[in-house]
Image 1 (cartoon, rainbow, N blue to C red):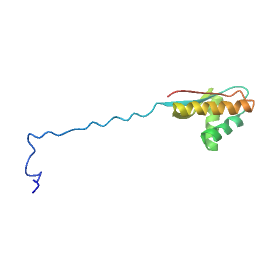
Image 2 (image 1 turned 30 degrees about the vertical axis):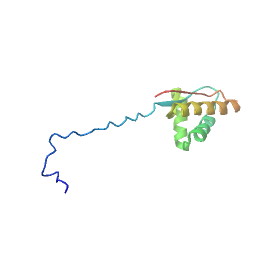
Image 3 (image 1 turned 30 degrees about the horizontal axis):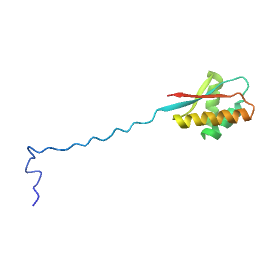
Image 4 (image 1 turned 90 degrees about the horizontal axis):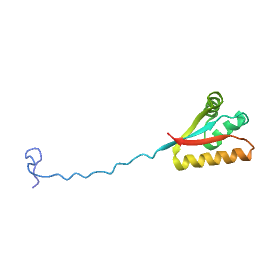
Length: 107
């Protein structure tokens, strides 16, 4: 018959403690749009909606920040995703004849 743990203490018994591996979150990278004198505001908004799935108001806010402050963070991703987004947007801009600069850096 099993002993009732409430009535009998477990003196002298060892308990195995298993250590769980710590799961680290991958480092995030910021995708940054930079201002220039030639890329249109409409093009920047269209790129934000197309490649970053931003709403009209989110795209407008980011575009205005780029225009007024010189740059703005569009999104944060893991390194591979951020680099791919930068490459895709830059390729799209070049095909459209726009000198838009988009970079990524650690967050």
